[in-house]
Image (tube, rainbow, N blue to C red; front, side, top):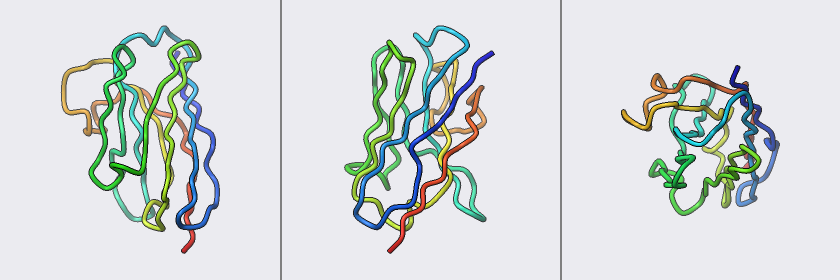
Length: 125
């Protein structure tokens, strides 16, 4: 059974940095895609970043390009999201998710097979 556990959220000020971690377990993670999504109150869950386990190819939504960096440690089955220059609009619950298949739109949350419980990120102005 796949389990994804996020950590690293917290309350920070605008301009600060945070690093989120997602520890994956329950199978061999050599293929597929790991994604980070976020959901602010009253809004839909949106794609933030993704990375392929095999090649490390990265994907980002436009609003975080240049500020966020996704990475993975295959040996630890862990994916990270380094978030710099945080803005109040980055405030949300952040979720990691695992997509078994490489096909399909990476931003489509309905294509992801497994989800973590989320970690809250709050950025004050």
